Length: 520
Image (cartoon, rainbow, N blue to C red):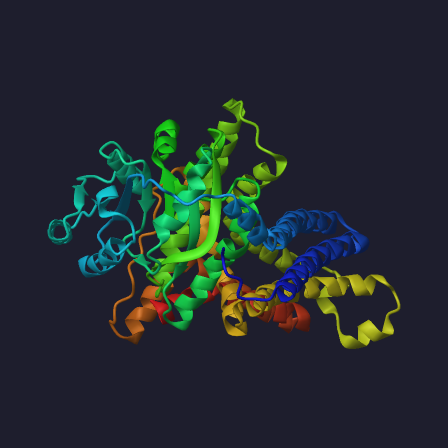
């Protein structure tokens, strides 16, 4: 059974505190919405109040639903333990094919990780290893082919990237007759040799299509370790909670899949995030899935901001595609999901859009608030203590909601990952990525090429790297400058609170440029 690194009481207390934090965050936003209507005395202010309330309701829904995920994840170890108690040892080993999709990766890294895959403890006559090479660089493809020959593993090279990773896997499925498929990305190094033996017993339930395990990155720099935590929240809390609803997401690798399920589903849907689409199709075809919160392989750490940007662009482009796909598919299917399962899929599709578009909308509305005639924009301590109107305490909720949005990820990271500094970094990354994610969502609707064409900064000298960072983050730079300009204007009007508020926003949105320059 999965080991618990915290005592049960402490873990439950952490979950309760998480629920309280998210509930307070939602209440603060809605409380400030009430205040906006309370003081509204013109059409402009009523429109502003309605806009803020609408965004607050969206944010409140995501916050409350997130608290449900955190709470339910506490009970997953017990749930999984009961399933494991019913399993019997595997006596007859089925055939397993291990697929390693590759695209222009460093051959030395691929070879190192291939060796780790070869060390998996499973009968050699029952396993096969396949390198699925989509590399467009001929020299890389040549080296990978030689590596495959040296280690006597299957090698497939495609001359085009039709269908991206999903296309490579679908091409492989046509040539593979194994009963089960294991997938590891080319940057993942196996750290637990019992991966196949541990997961196979779960397939005694004929309805199980796949079993997903926890994905984490290797330790690296402060930045890469913060990104690891950035993703770890999903695998430690959201995945277990979703597994209760049979909506655990197949995450592209570190998973074992039943080949007959793949055949029935018709392969992987050929989208940029094929894993999410396959998870949904598995459910729609009547299969079930499981999540095992245990690390069997570690991925290469994301060391540069450029890598993170490209990852987040792909995620949000694909998630936005998934939303329209979900509603189209549901409208033509006779399969009925539970209400919680439907909510899981909807929140997954809208999740990164919520973290980006809603942040930007809150910022724009904040500008309108600062330059309205609301007393909130000119609040000072003398006014607070001299005014006995109970409405004055509601206007404090605006500042409270914003402060709590900062403290929540910091506190949660301290509770679950023992680091305040990385929690603060997680908060900052959401603002640094807001425009990238928003542009990805817009690109989806415009059906533009799903990619952000950045290359890591080269060591060309400080001045050139600064210029390059600014040019690649033009939208963020323009928005930040506007924030700083408006802050100066507010301060010139003796609006200290408004000036401070907009200055802080200017700093947050300039972080995309700062992180690109600092981390590459």
